[in-house]
Length: 439
Image (cartoon, rainbow, N blue to C red; front, side):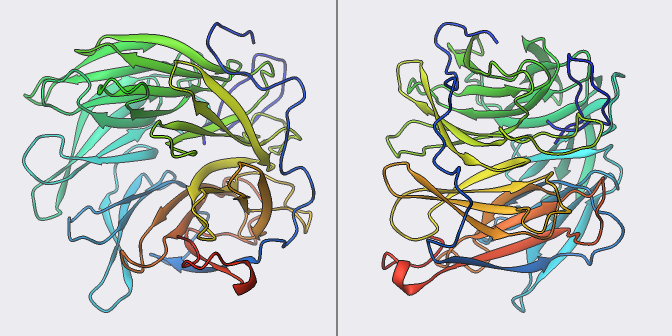
């Protein structure tokens, strides 16, 4: 969810988040869509919602919700980025079975993403924050990477590890050079100038920056072993007019090669995020990918080609494009088996839609028949402006996972707002596969 610009002459108020190169995936001229038909309740799936955390006040800008066990008590917690209030908060279960929200930091400038990792090797979990500095368009070098250092008692002290850089939209952690220390991969959206970098942990609190890509519009970075060589690789999605997904293959010791694995021929494609997940359960991470950015127009809104797709990792350096379905303003897809049939379904939210239309969808499920034909199922038409999703075992490790959403209300209408919401799904008995719904 990044304010961006386009290369064409458009009047915009902006937010979001070609040419083929050898080895990259591409959407066909006519994309096969398995979810073009108007979604109806053909799969017997319903969802109920419950607010989590603090009460709704004002107009929330929840840019990111992350699932983590921050206090390492064996129960899932949630970390919340509130970009407007410069706040990081922690939603955790209480002894009485409820949830409480605790403010961890209130001075991080426009936080839009967190990752949890023991960055200093002291045995407790720290929080690394991607800070844009300003969510609305800005070409100044106001971005930063901030670590909230844990003293072991869940008291956190902010420390800036990189500042005066292009606006930062994502940060992830892994040992990228094999020295035993956790390094960082960083997406810097910028505006005219942006970058994808990795930051080498020197072990004394300092980080050395290494440039991977010099392009504006980086939205997400993800880390996984994409090629089976037991080294962590980096996948990044770049919006603006580029609309590309890059694979940075780790050749060892932090030396990376670069390859485009998807490039849209539509420079208005609207890339809005990626998530790595093994969709076909063949042991190789695939790329779950949404395109739904609509904040670069005079009136923020959706486009007919918005939706969700996945890039199948074939294991030979190539990725095959599969369209999952259409969703205006699609953001933040998650993979989850909703009906217990063993196949991964997909849930995505809508950050922008034509909210004046009663049929506009806020939360959509795409049900996988096991052969990767997806049936759309509307889960909710409100609250509006949902920008981020995650899943969490809030009801216990043996209970079905819960879908968590965050609302980002920068634009009207403001009559159906939310902050953080838990969604519990139920499958009608005639549609059940004999397992718990949502598993």
